[in-house]
Image (cartoon, rainbow, N blue to C red; front, side, top):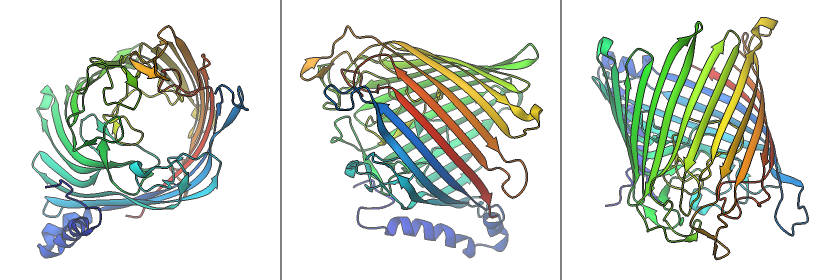
Length: 478
């Protein structure tokens, strides 16, 4: 039997029944038992505005714009969402539901989705790269149960436990169709353990309105389900251990281990972590093939390892981070999501520099340094400015993929770099209290001459200038 417990392709009744049963159930138990459902409920939301200008250098041989920057993503977009989170009737059952509306205010010539509004296609496998549209999208509809130290959520859900599965974000999150179960156990001074398991048979990024199945690298082979198990142990002495395993059925296994430890240095806490992410596909034997044409992603175990350092002194916050990658095979870069196609799923990766590139090519080592300055001492409460710089070196092409029918040139090595500027203001008082205004600027430099994603560098694009201005205004109704 098909495991499509929320919604069949042409029938919305199962999801409607789930919503109706949960919302109606508090009326059929005692008022004392139902009180928790309503008294602990919250309805919140946000109003959002995004303006973005992103241009890329065209290095396509023979192009009329060769060497020049061309428009890649220009848009102005309005979003608004409502998010209802219930309490628990009889301290046992509840329901969460959320949706958002999007409207394009200005749209450039680029055809791909801007990922803030809605794609002109309703779901990933119908994507024709023809642009965006406005409309409404339901991104959460979940039945939730709790008992003692255990909890369950089922429906359209966002992972809330400790697993490797994650969602894409615009201003609101994407959603899995599935179930997640977890628990937590407090051992007093000896620490606290939490664990969760997630199973799903469909997913949607927030710019798609319909759920869609998982598929392998060829974008055709169906994957019946993805699943993940994770654990976290908090020693309550600033030491935290995390681990997770995830699987795309018949296609890929992934692994994560993370150690976080904070300790005092010169009167302030030094925040540190070591992180390991691994992936191993279950298909093929490393035979050369064109990227995306076969499902043999990696030769052996691919991995990304990183270390992070963070330190705050008065109004200055410093970050120093580094990562290195091994991703031999047809794909040629490490990907945190368990299904490789664009927007087909997402995965957890706690190292992120907002510097355009993922700095994740096979053989690449990269480092990032940043400082953020809180301007409160200058009678500018809520204002902060930050700068960052990332550099990656020794990036290799995919080791077994073909380019125009021939093995990618293995003598290539490419460096890449980016610097960033961020200016943010959070309103401190008045009716707009909590509203965030954020301007982020990225200047990315590819030190090679390959065209976008070309010559075996399947996740490396050309020079880019990206300017993002976002306004986020949260509100609470009750």
